[in-house]
Amino acid sequence: MNRRRTLFSVLVVLAIAFPYIVPDSTFWVTNGGTRTLWIGLVALSMAYLNRNLGLMSLGQLFFSGMTSYTIAILTIKHGVSYGISIPLGLIVGTLSGVIIGWIALKTEAVYFLMLSLALALGLYSLTLAGESVTGGHTGINSVAPPKIFGIDITARNTFYYLCLIINILIFAACLRLQNSNFGLALNGIRDNSARTTSLGYSNNKLRLAAFVWASFIASVGGVIGLFYYQAVSPDSVGLARSIDLLIVVVVGGASYLGGSYLGAAVIAVFESIIQDYTKYYVAAEGALFILILLIAPQGLMGIGEQMRKRRNKKLASAASTK
Amino acid sequence: MPLWERRAVSQFVFTLLNGVTLAGVFFLVASGLTLIFGLMRVINLAHGGYYLFAAYFSWTIMDKVHNWALGALISAIFMAVAGTIIYIILLRRFQYEELRVALITLGISLILQQLMLALFGGDAYQISVPTPLRGVVAIPGVEVNFPKFKLIFFLFAIVIGLGLWLLISKTKFGSIIRAGVDDTMMVSALGIDVQKVFTLVIALGCALVGFAGAVGGTYIAYGMGTDGDFLLFSLQVVIIGGLGSVGGAALGSLIVGVVGQLATGYAPTLSGAIVFILMILVLAFRPQGILGRKL
Image (cartoon, rainbow over all chains, first blue to last red; front, side):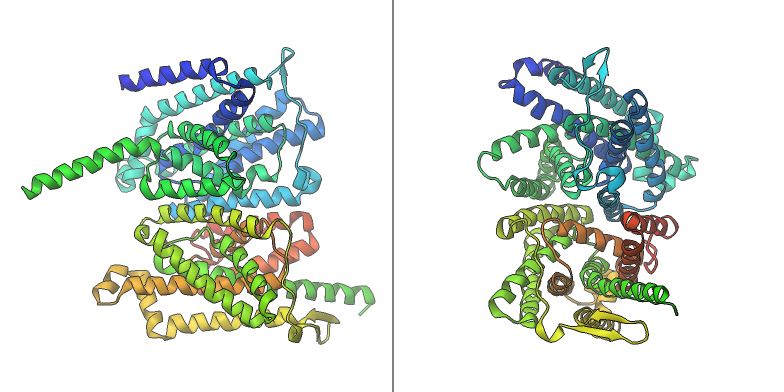
């Protein structure tokens, strides 16, 4: 535990120093740093669901998209101030998590995966069709950056640090929740729901609460994404982006919260390198994704544990043959 | 009947027929997906990609041989072979890890998407209607001239649907499939080579999507992004109808096709939302789908 805390602190210090130590900072702070934090956050909501509920979701962009669209429609189309539209957007995203969660949690495993994917794709076609409200294919562009005390928060370094603070807060909250009674109860439900029922836990309510928390995380990701691109369009919730996120989560390690950030960073570096060699870098990403699933299903974070298990198995079988 | 009323009726009938015949295309696509899932609990998220690839592929073949039926047949055979090879190389060893298989198929869909972009570019394609199927059929009583090929395609879907139903409920192979759905271990304990049955079902499912590519590619234009659209349609069909049952796929296709077309015809801005809400409602009250069995 102590080693983990040291590692966490070192990473935070590195993240704080990042804009000053990285070469070519105009490119890397935004395309490496802020993007990793944004994608990492939405990926975190997936990893949280996977770790605590044992559910793999492809629909977290649904909640991000609801939030982004709410803010963009209110502020850009109707001139509502950000002070009102951002909290409202977060509420819409999180509340849709209550409704969706109530329905989606009735399903399991592959069925849940399918349903969540259908959700995100449904929002995609919805935003495409509702042209008068959502701007159709082009979406809503030139989203003005919000200003706090006259400071543009989307300026390169300011935005990076803002995202960093938000991520640290939410990540810490996730860890806290995981080690609380709530988190332990969730583990119990995931591993043996019949037993937690007989112990008097109301499984459905606890699972729904966890689902809504994940929707909230994804909604915050929606706010960051909106200002990162200064635009929102159907593609922000489309199949390609959902799969991108899935790749990040799986490459990093779907049952490790930290895996989201590791995956996001690895993919960011991978993309920038591979783009120099081929324009079909998405296919390369798909190949990397399949490779990881074939050889290390627990992702990069899980490789250590996977090796340890394999060694133990070898030792055990060696001992039993003696 | 006054003129405006007659017009309204014929417009309604036309839209309805469009929906029903489109449902035939959806059924051809979704039946393969549901067949494979029913036996193996494996969901192929590259199914939309397979469909689009089959559409491009049959276009290419028909461009060479100038024969629609031959092109469709070659496409079905090709997809059966290709799908089986992908299954054997990438999926078979994990087939009891449903989620892993689903994720790997998503990876396949990504690679396929880029491959198709590289081979066929971003333009929209549509296979031309074979000459004997051109022209319209006058629907008696309602002043509707409906394209003949759409009706013939719907007939294809019915024949294939009946064929699948007969195969599954009346033949020995079908009874093995049905038994496999319930208890794979027991079937293999009875001395039946389950691996062979699995592989045959995969081949059959992929052949269906290969044929669907030719039919659907003639019915509606396709291009970049069609893979995602058809994955969504198929998911809606199987979620609403019930995953794993051919009857469910037929019912789901009819609902998605007809409701979708009526919505597009009468409330275009809401068309996406209506099918979507329908799906949510089905899930809320019957999570296994209308004709699905309890999970």
